[in-house]
Amino acid sequence: MTRQETRLKVFAAAIELMAEQGYTATTVEAIAERAGVAKGTVFYNFGSKEQLFAQLLDYGIGLLADAMGEAGDLDAAVLAQLEFFARYGPFARVLLAEMWRTAWQDAVAALRSRVISVYERHVPGGVAPTAVFGMVLTVSIERKVLRPDRSIEEVHTELMDLLRGRITS
Image (cartoon, rainbow, N blue to C red; front, side, top):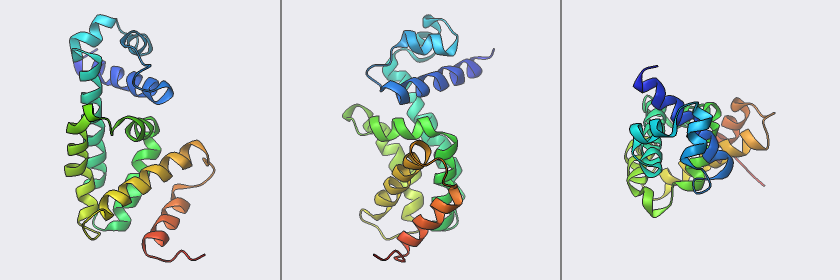
């Protein structure tokens, strides 16, 4: 197995465990066991649990930025984010739960510059781009965990109606 393949196995194991039990409760031993590698392999590749998580956030944010980067309008950006989080559900849960800690401010800055900036191209400034990102993230998790029967297309249509002001009481 190549070093990159090993790192990806460790990333997958770490994100699954952190989504299940949170960052604090997840140990390097558990990550290594889930990945099928030695504990020393995790330390060799990442140095520490903190560095593993920081690199995991960076990797996941990069994948999300790539998925959303080609969006030509708000509709396409929302759909790309929904599809990404449907594919990478555990990453969505970890992002929502762990990202806002002071220790991960570099990751927050990367999220802002690489992902939320996509929304800044399509909606007015201020808090709106962050609000749209947060809304889609939250709805993605709700769909995955509580409403898996709802299609991405259905959720996308409702979100776009809401964003266009077409939802009435």
